[in-house]
Length: 244
Image (tube, rainbow, N blue to C red; front, top):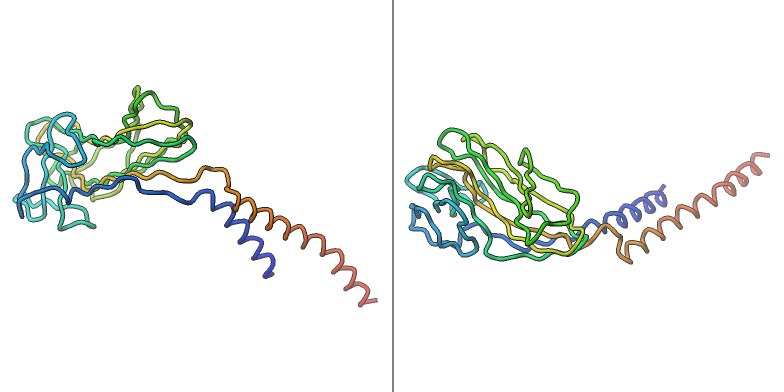
């Protein structure tokens, strides 16, 4: 039994090794931005890592006059109201362009809640590619539908005001090398929008093909299984001889 368990563990380890190794290549929870204590910055356009590509957004911190709160993992920090104070929902786009390699999986994650005031707001987020992308295995969490238009791949959703902070993710597997920026925004037009508290991007470092050490473990596991199968007739013959 111990040998069977050992072989199974070796096979599982070998098969799983090719799926490990995701690396975070970008993360911003807005705590590096300057906000007066217990206050907010109306229609902020001076983010360190983002451009406001359309509309406007407000930057808030804990204790702000509106009673809005950030993510449960960041209650004392800063966060963004994606609908600023101009009546036009805002869109944030990363200033940095990120490259990726064929065979890798890229995932962007946004920590978002409802507006905490009333009504329902639209949310969208995902990738702006440098050119029409060659991708596969498009997947989402949180978002309820996707929109692929030219060089943009976006998840979309409608959030009620009481929706708690949760991760909204979009991921893809690259068929060729490429590059992208990340964007997130709302179509809200009433100066209250979804609240954003964290943006992160991760890229897997391993493809779906096992690395050499993984192949070695698999071969070793199969060899062990074969050896046990070859021994079974001999054990049965020995037992039968003792009985006769």
